[in-house]
View 1 (cartoon, helix red, strand yellow):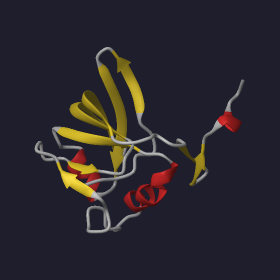
View 2 (cartoon, rainbow, N blue to C red):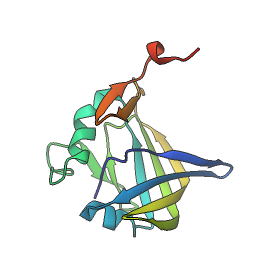
View 3 (tube, rainbow, N blue to C red):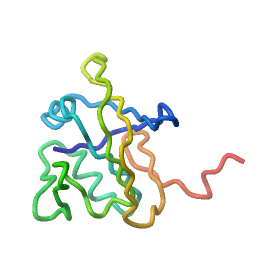
Length: 134
């Protein structure tokens, strides 16, 4: 199962803990009960993958996606620049969503990060040197 999270936030640097929320889909209900998850940190070069995972009913782990199942059972997208394997520590109901807090167990760099993306006003935007607030 997989989805595109609209935000992932750092909660703690020692130990490394992050948080994100899931809601409303079959993928969200599976992820909300999983003991471990992979958080794929994507950049602008993976926009097609990001959109596929954000589209309800889209094929996520079919033959068109470059992925594998790790020995620990999670699906890994090979094209993601960075992948964080996390243990879910807490699940907090928040309205129609569930907030997950997860400890980072392992970090895997698979390629260059490229330009980061921000989702704002229902569309994706690249961040780059022009976006510095200096």
